[in-house]
Length: 294
Image (cartoon, rainbow, N blue to C red; front, side, top):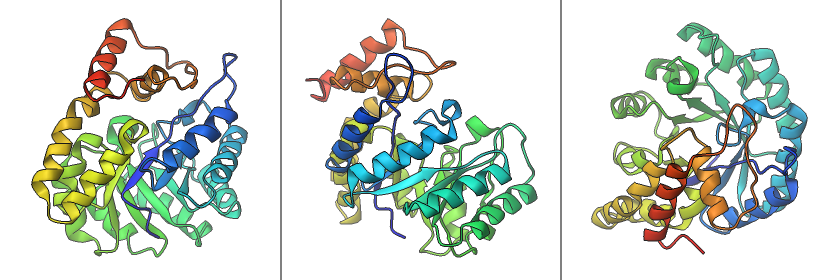
């Protein structure tokens, strides 16, 4: 399974009453698919999955799949810190005809590496026809999926990729060293996409692609064609945006940025909340410099 270069970790729009806004979801998904996104990752961290019910998540999968209708792939965030729950959700996603599943490292219960291996192995075996991307984000899960464990998991036929969001390029290099060339490594941080490409990465699971998906595609294609200086120029031009989108907890800044562009994406479900004026001001400044405001 080739998920492409730019995968967008899609936000979840809400109505004023806090319910999911499926109409805006549909419009945003189609917009992203037309503007640089190869695969939409639905109900991941950026989609506020911790406060969504499974019923809402599966309706989001259905709506997004229908909205992009072959113009982009759809990857379902069906991970959990309960292996049984993750298996059930992933099997259901497979029956829906989705293109893949994002499986986060189990959070809070902090399993050892052997437990992590058995968790992902069980999910992969239970949904053997669905391609799976591992998701390592120790800053949120409190546990790091080590390169040796990734390499062992890569031997399972439908575990085809990892979203590496440890921020550690040495770790990404070790994963590349230990895994087959057809095992895809995606940057989990927009600001590390270009360095990750240099050590064998395939692309990025991006937040910034909500705003600059086309430019990210240009950067990656420039690098792939040997135009490293051109790729570096794009990276440096977008670097301030990459950092601004993480000035506070994701997805707070990117949702605010979309609002500044006129998207009716609504607010957040507690415990996430609206940003303060300082965050808004920084986003306006950076977006204006990149001509991203209406």
